[in-house]
Image 1 (cartoon, one colour):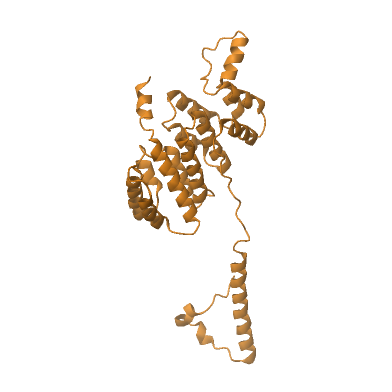
Image 2 (tube, one colour):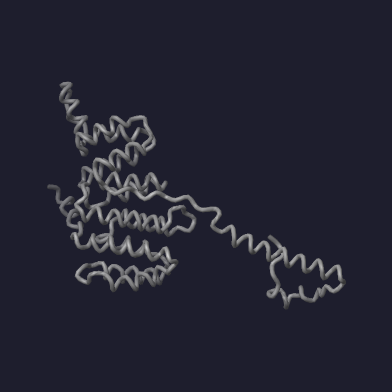
Length: 292
């Protein structure tokens, strides 16, 4: 086996590490929904994790970076021997203020991924899970697939194929690319008496090839749904649309306050008792805003 692949496989963590990672992401997701600061959550959760794993040490390093820059992803990138590039990428996208990908969605995706690894997930299932996360969350394919290719679960053949997919995405139907990399396609070549040299690599099984062939020229969501059922990887969290009515009541309350202030000014002006000195510089911070 290739020495480079042996070195990459050495970065695969012990099962207990993935168990604790899944627990960490779960606790962060649940408690972050209560609007608790990330720094306080990490400091608290650190004592709830097994000290026999390396996760508490990783959290210490993440806390240092969080206090320094307010971000976790730079520390996760430096801990590439512990966190995968895809984990770091999801957190970095969630930390972008202008992005639509929330921290809750990132933590939910990472929690499911860690639990799937704990259960002994296959490279095929993990690839489809990662790829579906990119698609459903509308993340950058170029950066996302590059991060996926650096996962130690993939050997050099997998890595090259994923990078090829990155270059072909949007140009060739994804279902076609998966079919051409399946044992079903190889079997069809052999049955037709055609050579298989120069074809492949055949990374997916016969079942995945048939599913891909049956979903050509269709919505990719049908392909993902079928693969999820047959490969058994976790369901990808759905991004919930923002509730536009969530802030409606507070906004209406502020508008009512402004209207009341305007009415009072108009009443004072009609009575001839309007004191314009209230609008001088020294009183400006004590007045309610008059504009929308």
